[in-house]
Image (tube, rainbow over all chains, first blue to last red; front, side, top):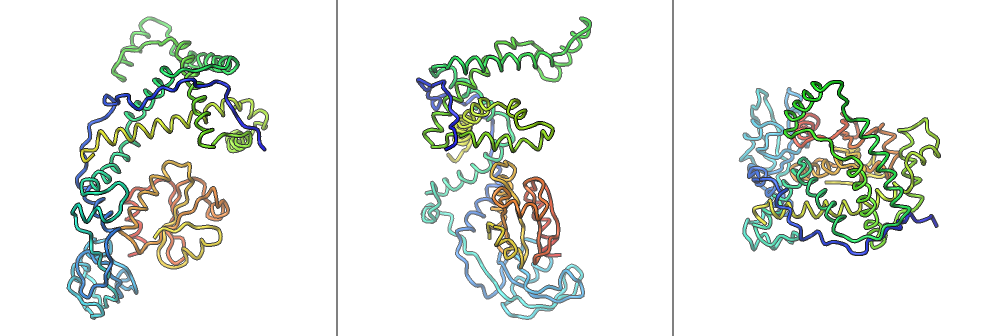
Length: 328
Length: 104
């Protein structure tokens, strides 16, 4: 059996972040009523009853055979949703009222077309009433309001992929979870985290702007403030990097315990696969050099950390939906 | 209708009618977004076959169709590949392709 990747640092007492108020991060949001109607129609359509129609109506799905000198209208067995205009708005409008099997001869989009409507399928949508919606058996949906809430949740979920507020809220929870929980830090793991912090500090320091003259500094600070809307300041990188890497270790330890609970503990095989997946990006490095560049300890710590981050993200998304959705 | 393709079932699934083949992997975020778009479109276009290929589980299909990144989308009519598009498409772009290849 492959060697298990474990962390020795332990979380003694885990802070309950679920009660923290995230209101300050939640953005203003107004549902798009057009998109809401479209989504509700789609959902209801999925639960609609299909019947065979005798006469073409707008919204029907029909199978059409048509002949014409215009290639577009020379087709056998083509499916058209009448009135959507995906095939031909003109033709679809002129088909309304035709009977199944009835031969037609008409002109649409400047083409002479003959043909038959071979099949008419109509979807009878469920009524938009609480009783009817409840009977559909959609999980968590017992009324029209619930259905609207579910559809607006979709809009919010799309929005959350694009905005930074949700990421900021997750980062806030990550920090609070680390600060308010109690840990028993393993000396060796802590030493490695501090070493990484020191290396990162040097890397960041090397990226700091260097000014030859005071005028250059003043000009840079002015441009910075204009671009980012806040004064330029040089944070204490030692403290900053050390706290980040220690938090990562602490949350990694928490994630390791969660992985045990979820039966998702990593093994050395997972690490080998990870290294293998990176090989194409570093074709000149040997496997040993790759392992030195991406040490197993970091891999374990980051992956276990990801388990907690995922949990925090899910909580943030659920809280944002609850606060942003007017139907909740 | 959404079908999950394997090496054995792929040809049969795309052989007849109009198909949109979605090459994806489970860890790819844009793939998940595209998957939702396709799920919605199946309700508007129930006659279009949506065929999903997990390239991690079925690398041979990825190699056969020269898939270099996910999501990659193939538009296939009666087994013939009409176009391959790499990257996330939005709903309107997919509808345009359906109009172009199914109706034109």
